[in-house]
Amino acid sequence: ARALGMGSAYTPGANMAEIERMFRVAAEGGASVHIHMRNGLAGLDSTIAAAAAAGAKLHIVHVNSSGGDELVEFLSHISAARAKGQDVTTEAYPYGAGMTEISAALFDGWEKWTDDRIAQHQLVSTGERLTRKTFAAARAQANVTVIIHGRSEEQTRTAVLSPLSMIASDGFIKDGRGHPRTSGSYSKVLGKYVREENGLSLMEALRKMTLMPAQRLEARVPAMAGKGRIKVGAD
Image (cartoon, rainbow, N blue to C red; front, side, top):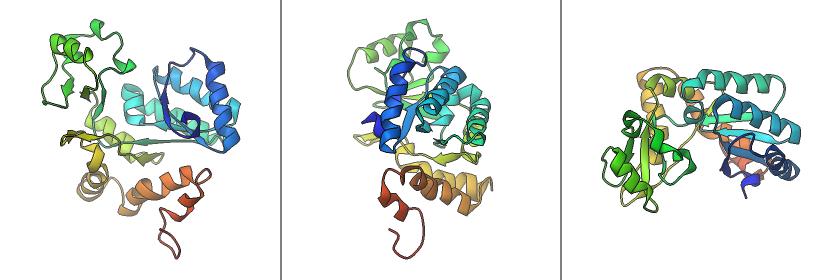
């Protein structure tokens, strides 16, 4: 399923042969591979190289959170790969905070974190910021989600305004609580980055939300050729 377009997170270099085999399955099926990145620029470069070797179409998930402090370099490396003719795309959600389950491998080794880094994490269920003690208690439970306040508005804006990036939503709501990107991503882009800041034109923002995602998927999903466009016969 992952090879046919679902997200996957991995540690680059751990077993590149297996990664390339997964990418080749996607290439044979005409699917793009959508990857949640780890290990910074080294991970990005090895992923791009693996996709190129396999002849697979590559989509880097959430460049804003994957790139972090190296965001500008991340975008530059993606742009360089595209300039060489490689099919690489990416997207961003318009928030400085992310969200995931606290049991995720992302948090392995948290015991060595500083207190300030731990305090960047907020329980979705109660809204409280975590301490070392409450972080440990949450890790011991199942299905606990946390919001991660880790990026600046400048980083968010850079990712959203980049001509490379589509606009992503992502997330889930449980008992009325979750991350605002679940239902607020598109309205925030239109309100903040189009209307208030004039960072994007209305048509460019709409293209990032509709046409670009459809174009990313239409080789594998023919119905996408009828989406993201206003024309006779389109959805």
